[in-house]
Length: 309
Image 1 (cartoon, rainbow, N blue to C red):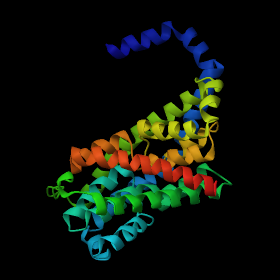
Image 2 (spheres, rainbow, N blue to C red; image 1 turned 180 degrees about the vertical axis):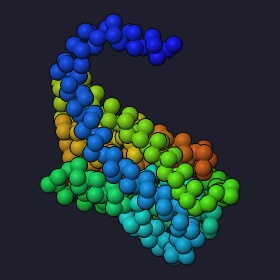
Image 3 (cartoon, rainbow, N blue to C red; image 1 turned 120 degrees about the vertical axis):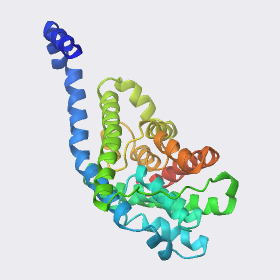
Image 4 (cartoon, rainbow, N blue to C red; image 1 turned 90 degrees about the vertical axis):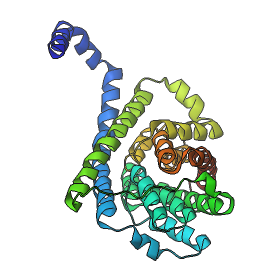
């Protein structure tokens, strides 16, 4: 009955709908929306496949054995490990929890949590495709993200308290085979991350087509305000790291440094990540770790952008 009502309404209002779809604003919106989705989807799917394979087929004990025992040394090694282990930020939280449950020092696990979704090969390749002819953006994203991840790991090692971090429970697959667990993880991550990609593409298209150019120029023209605006936008949009570069590339009114802040902050601090961290490690942890990461990510992005961009 509901479908019939929708179809009848569409038939009766076909002329207004046709005029609305042919309007220049609507055409511009659809062009940006489709372009972002078409460019980002292959990298999103590839990242989800690799992330699921790592989560299912690589035992967490491997990482515990590979890291140095001293936390000060384990932090940069764990941060660098994120550069060779693809995965989105949604997957990095349970992986970091599994590392802690296997004896990895929390400082190193948290460094990996922040670096893995930001500096892995899939994300860096997507950034290079989204910013053709601008290899400095790829380098700036890698450097800034790795610096923030290591700095937060060392900061937690020096100032973190055990009562702020709730030890994660060791997860079980409930008798699932590896193949079943792999495809279950792929289905979950594609639907979950794909929804955020659609939301991000919608927001980017709306900003491009609806928001007056004068408003964007007013914000984008201010060096400090533009960085903060895109950093907050990254937190709100919560786009998967395999796709955020294409949304950032569409925000052409903003400076490269502001777009770098969008790329660095998003994989480390967003609304879904705060919820995931709160559920995995406790609210006391998330309320301290997320704001500190946001401030450090914005500051490092601004400094890195000033040097490399």
